[in-house]
Length: 185
Image (cartoon, rainbow, N blue to C red; front, top):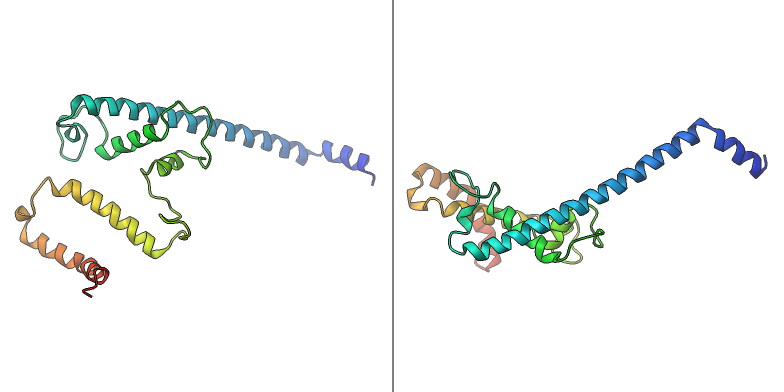
């Protein structure tokens, strides 16, 4: 079969027609997704810029302006952590984004670049994804951020004795790791 015969036969094939249709759809979806990610980055950026301005305007009581569990009246319908993430994006992208920055394919990539999300590949160059030490590091960091937010709402002295004891038992493995880290273990 000659190249000309092969091309003529292949072009007429229903499978080739369908393959080309699907490819066109695939490319169009990719373009739409790219446009959506750019739009999301620009919205996050604008929210961040506005929040930076509001933070300067409000100064005192800034943190209390955000919706947290148990909060009654808050002008913002999202958490202080979310606000920090928006402001990080604004600092990373001071100008309006017209194309995806290098290394960004989805919205979470821009949050990782801004420092709002941990890098799943590890914080240090060369660490591999799923490294147990890095996973412990990231988990401890998230725990401590949440703990600091909650701890301020109710002093430890007011906790029920049973909960204190249960927490002591749960934290004991962490205390052992800490002692080992500082050379007491």
